[in-house]
Each structure stands twice: as structure tokens, then as C-alpha cells.
Length: 186
Image (cartoon, rainbow, N blue to C red; front, side, top):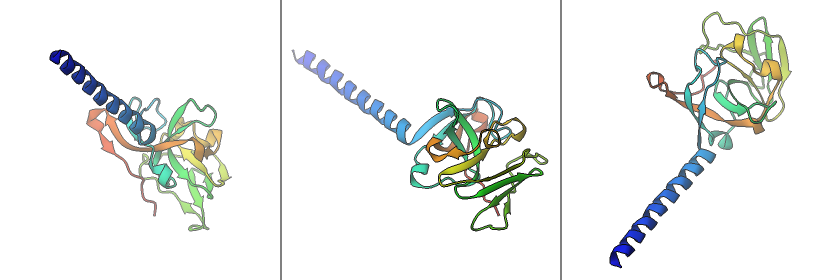
């Protein structure tokens, strides 16, 4: 009988540990970090097809997005589809794309801030003729591979409710593991 009690106690202990592990993973996955697999070429050369990323879901609950951050969001035209793009225009700003130049107009830059996107290949041109003013909780996003990206130039603004999080870490391929932060614009 003593052996049966020890087996039962061991089973209960294993069940407790497994339950705590599953609940912890579910909480982390639901509220803190989510894996994301890049599908497509819209963010090349910085992110490639089949890159495995970790997306921080907590940051945008604590602060607003910053220009230059790489984000994952639900595509406004189909909430079941997830996209990865770069944050270009923030709430309340005016975004202008003209002759391949992106200019941001806001309170700090009433005459316009021309984006110097050092993360893009030299000579890359941003096509389109855009002039859009963003309302509160609206954003303008672009893929890094501007010639092959389905982004705000095509489907319009990104509402805040569709944001999932900011890309923090590339885990795959192992030879390309890296952490990410938003670039600083002068």
C-alpha cells in the first residue's frame, strides 16, 4: 500500500509540474512573446522568408509605437492574416511620398522630416505618390523591399487595434541570430 501511495504522489507531482508549465507557456505566449515565421520577401534584405522571430506583445500595451520599429500586425483586410512591416508614420502625422522621398510632418517637424532610412539598400526608391494625414491610433507602414511589398501604399492606414507587437529577436537561421531596436532618425 505504501508503494501505491508513493506512485500516486509521484503522479500528482508530475501533473502539478506539467500544469504549471502549460499555464506559464500559455500566459507568456498570450501576453508577452509570440513566435512569428516570415512568409515572403516584403522585408528583404533585413528579414527573409522563413526567418523565425520573437515578437514582443507587451511593449505596445505600455507605450506607443516608434518610427522605424519592425512590427507584426493583423492585416486590416483579413484579420486572420499577419504581416510584418516597418513603422513609418505615427498617429497625428502627415506622411508624404513624392519622387521616392518620404517626408514626415508633425509638431516637431512642421516643415517636414525627410527620412534617412539607413537600413535600406543604397539606391532603393520608394514608389508611390502619397499624402495622408493619420488620425489618433492610425499608422503608416512599409515593407523594406519597397518594390515587392503590399503595404500602406496599397491598402491604407493601419489601425492600432491590429497591432500585435514589435520584433525583438531573430532566432532562425542560427547564423543570423540578432536583436532589433528602432533606428534613430536625425
